Length: 139
Image: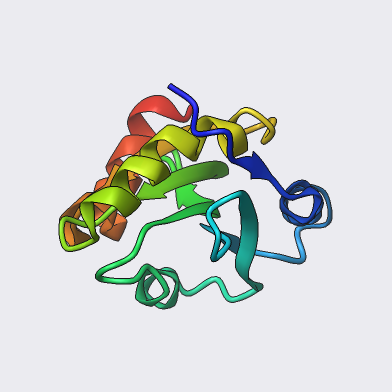
């Protein structure tokens, strides 16, 4: 199901900046006010995962890409680009429906995503939860 929403060119530009230059750590995306386009909501170079989580609103939907760094059991450093689809239980039902049906408009344009994370509450996007997921699927 598609909502007819499209990703603004700035979304792909910001993603390329994160992916290629490594000057960004995460990007948050949202629907514009008239729900016709996905736009960049916030970009940050901060590697503080807890800070990233504070930008996921308790009553609003967002998508995000986070460059997640982690260490394997052998001590080697890895990173995976994680795509987050944040749709908290407290968000209005209509917003959650449009968010869900618009996800592919953004997700399909982002080449190189390693892991997808669906979040409806803080436990699903907690650092340990995502770390476990990237270690299992992100080798």
